[in-house]
Length: 135
Image 1: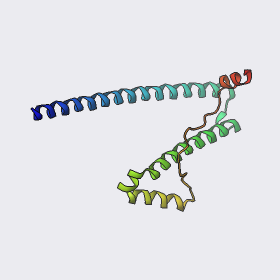
Image 2: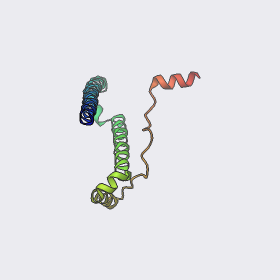
Image 3: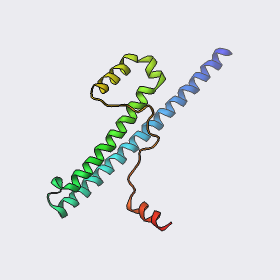
Image 4: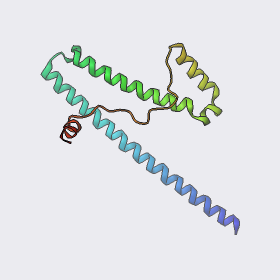
């Protein structure tokens, strides 16, 4: 009887894991579609700006946009590295990797935050700005 119960419990857990994997796969597919739509939208907007402004890629506005994008990427990477370096399990299981990352970044005088930022600050959209000014 115990063997049958154990078998049923394992099958139930296996089904739960399979269902979670399918949900994760579906979420991944949805996220990939969102990223693709965002990239298409960005490209379309960029082409519109190029059509209006001409040589936009050499303009100060373009350089500022690119700098802001790079800053956001940098912040995301620093958050990821902070999470990786400060995770106790990873530190215990992969101490050589953690030490190598820390050493390599220290050589470039890059300081990893002791905690990742809880939320990446997003620039306020014009819609949010106008809403905030009405309140």
